Structure formats: structure tokens, C-alpha cells
Image 1 (tube, rainbow, N blue to C red):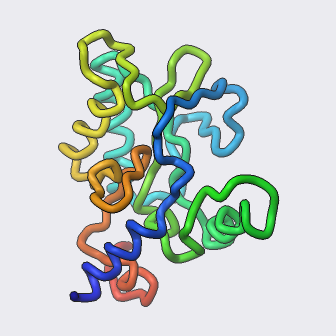
Image 2 (cartoon, one colour; image 1 turned 90 degrees about the vertical axis):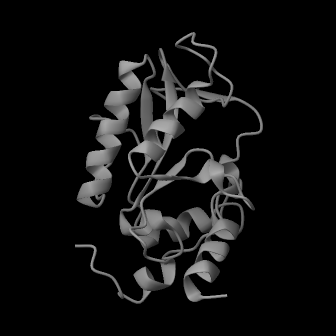
Length: 182
């Protein structure tokens, strides 16, 4: 097994289990205080990731789906704080990835949810545009057309809100600075 496939395998084991969408979840957009982006565009992303995320938002809107980016760039410090949650600090475990073990830490990933009126929802079956197809999966299809890898396609761990562009770099490449991203 080469380093890239090993890193990819490790990554699938280390991503956010709290976002596996086995049941619909909802929170009001006003209550969503984890990462409220006034412009609905996360900061700190690689320029191509940011551009494609905005195109995704626009293309989803064209077919009657409003998405909210709930996470983008995450510092190592924030990643470590999320990792501590449910272990050494209060709350539920939401990730198995420590700082440096997530594509979010390099500005290469975003998480999304559906915005329905005043609510942000994580519902894989919701069909708000009434075309008999899941809005969630329609957004994922558009994202893949734009070059994103969708966490919902992963075999060993499905991370439905997660979209990333790795540009062919493994986490090992990113961790060791062996890349030419910027």
C-alpha cells in the first residue's frame, strides 16, 4: 500500500463521525453559531476551493436549493479543540481527526447543509425543490461535477456534509509541506 492510499484510508477512519446523517437534524439559522458566515462563504480556503464552493452555492440556488457552508478552513488549534470534545471537554465526540489530520486544516474542504427557511437542516431525504430527488444528493452531484470529492462516496466512512479538493495531495504530503498549493 503506498503512502497516498494509506493516508486516504487513515483519513476515512479519522473524519467526523458526528456528521453521519442517520436521522434528519435541524437547527435554526440564527442558532447556528458553530460557523455562521454572513456571506455564506467560508474564509481561509484555497482560492480554487473557494471559487468552486461559490459556484456550487449558485448552481444549487438555480435549481431551488439553498445551501449553507457550515465549515471551511479549520486551524490546528480548532481541530484539536473539536477532537477534545467528548474526550477531555464537555460534549459529544464529533471527530477522530486531530490537528493536521483533516483537509479542513489546509483550506481544502468545506461542509454544507441545506437551508430551509429559517432552519439549517441535515436531512438526506429532503426534497424542497419538489423534483422527486434528494436535495442533498443533487448538491453532491453538482459538487462532483465541479471537481470536489464527496464524503458520502467514501466506502468505509460516509461523511455526507464533507466536500474536499485534494489536488492529488495526501495528508502526508500536506503535513510534511511536500506540496505546491499556494
